[in-house]
Length: 107
View 1 (cartoon, rainbow, N blue to C red):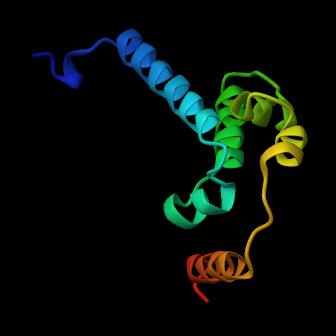
View 2 (cartoon, rainbow, N blue to C red; view 1 turned 45 degrees about the vertical axis):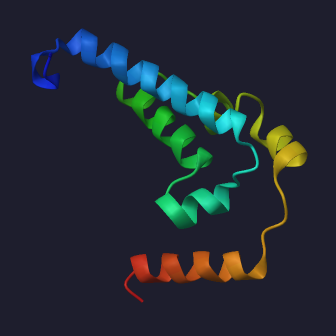
């Protein structure tokens, strides 16, 4: 059995990319999972993934807009996705999100 430390950089990159594509497909298959749900559970959401992808591009000298990077994650324009799939967030979820953000900020 191969240990991850024995993989080449190219193999690791290929596997990382495949896992990322699978994550995007999984999120696409589960549009009922809202960004607020992801934020409350895992402290990241589709927007975060798009922003991280944009930052990775910038580190490599590639200039992408925030919207274009997020569209990579959403599989469409983020505003179109929100119009089609985003539901209204409950007051309880909003309060939980605010409390989580305040706790992260130390307050």
